[in-house]
Amino acid sequence: AAARHGVSGAEVALEFLRKRGVETPTTIEELKAMKDKSLLAAAARDGDVVAMLLAMSAGCGLEAAIDGNDLRTALHFASEGGRTDMVVQLIQAGAEVEALNKEGATPLHYACLGGHASVAPILLRNGADKQAKDMNGVTPLHLAAKGGHAPVAEILLSEGSEKEATDKDGFTPLQYAAREGSSSVA
Image 1 (spheres, rainbow, N blue to C red):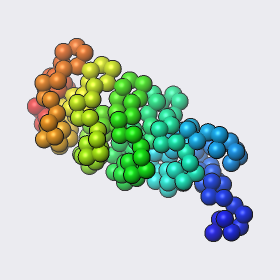
Image 2 (cartoon, rainbow, N blue to C red):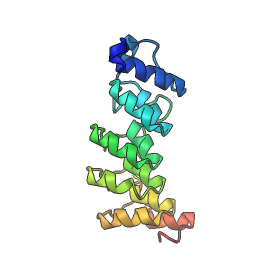
Image 3 (cartoon, rainbow, N blue to C red):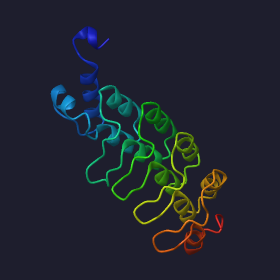
């Protein structure tokens, strides 16, 4: 319908995103020039599925990160927020399941940190490394244990996560759980 009125889908997407308070370029040309910028990540961060879909349809990059937010991608934000629908849509669109932020954390790290038992299996089924270590040697299981997220820890263990994995200081997930008083995980 927009095309019949001389308005492109990208223009509709820009206007919609602006009304939602997402910082956007001012022209379609600027949008096209910044396809690898962070509009998509901002929509995912804010949990706005419609804005995310519009940003995707406007050609915004799946792997673009928000400056000042430790280089998390849209999939990092959707995983952190436990937004299963967004995670599925981003993966189907080709988002990198193993994307790293500046600390080396993957979307699975963020899903486990947040205790999102609905998101972790989706990431794992789509190739997320259950043993991925960030810059400090912390695995997703360390984060699930630290947060007392027993259902997530059980998912990781059932998928073969190494319960004796150590971080750079030699601590295991069990030690993280004990240190945080997370008896449900221990």
